[in-house]
Image 1: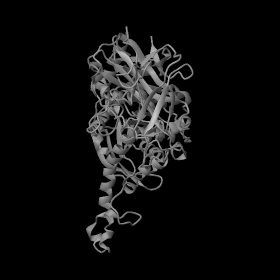
Image 2: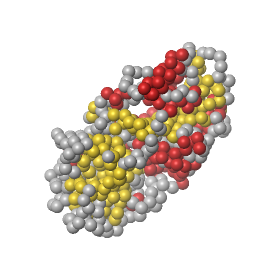
Image 3: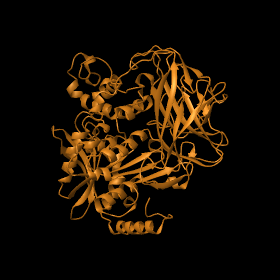
Length: 591
């Protein structure tokens, strides 16, 4: 994003000129080493590719540990090495060229620690190691950081989570079905390829009897069965076996270990990203509870638009303008490490937070996140007849309700409300992510719609969004979903952010408790965050329902174990909005 034509202040122009001159003066030829081995503490061998300046001397190291094939990092490796960095890209345990067994998250703290310390001791390393990358590659950084290797100097996690239960595998107690199944399926391909390579030696297998014992289809249990989920992705079954937030999740939760993180971090986040909520929690949590002054004072936040939902200026159905196209992940990463490891006074010497404000379609620097000047504002639900679908009369206003009739709808698990856009990963060909027109969803009678009148002036909402819901169900368990929408004058309904709560986890993610049918409960729903200017003539809308499928698994309303349940019942769900039950959307309004 630097060294391009842009409009800046005099001070910013000075920083830009200094940075560009330093970049121009520092350009090296690059030498490459492939398949460099490093032994972990338990003897397992991992392999990496190394890109480094073809020059005498010692340089800072940028390390990436990835499950997605180290050969995919060639472009960044060459670019960063030419800029004066040693770049190491390693296949994590059990993936591609590295030995060992692949199991999500489990080995990343120890393997990350060992690899950082190995990299720091290389003869061409100056002992300072930074890490970078997104998604699971962000997890390899965060998990290495909680192990606090002495030579880790900083990290740059892009769109990653803070808790591998609540904002990776589950949300609000509901299983992230689309992500979990599509991501796991993609990972399973390499696991399958390795199994084929390990179990199809023709000469070694010819003597085995019976013929049905052909090793490719017979894994550790010796059963005569085709390759299964248990052999290709045992972690997926474990995720289903641990729907509550128990020790399985806590031992590797970043949130449980903020105090163990002692390094500066640049958190790169995106509004429509599936890990947005966790990424923001990491910034806030480490800034408040990091294990060193350097960590607490050294947190930086950069929030763009798409993340896993896409890049560039057009994401989903929305063109966010030319400013959106300025974001370049590689440039941001290198600028961060120029600042952190080389002392370059670039944009990171200024305010620690930079966000993209949708609607206005502009970048803006801030002193912190959430914005201190944002005013928490309650928009209460109202209706006089019914709020079902766009044909209803549901409304939102800052005036508290008095005596109003509740709204009802029937949630049928065999006909769930379909997912339309939003924070999705990892199969955009079959289910496109990002901002999409929600009017088809809003035409359904099992979706309650509450809207403000059109705004008479631009109104900005920037910060965390939540929903206080008073509701009951005819079932012992059900879900409630909510979606914040920006409605244009032409009726286009742009989803901004959304959330879900599984009723059995309404009070605690650690302990499930079924409902008493017919009893009114208060549910608090986290809709994560957004930054959006509702333009004059636009309206603000809230959608409420009980499904968002296949992003989340369907609640079958029976209270059975979701991993094995097959039977379902329809639920009549009731939303209250009266003086005793003032259901309200809570928004951070910036004046």
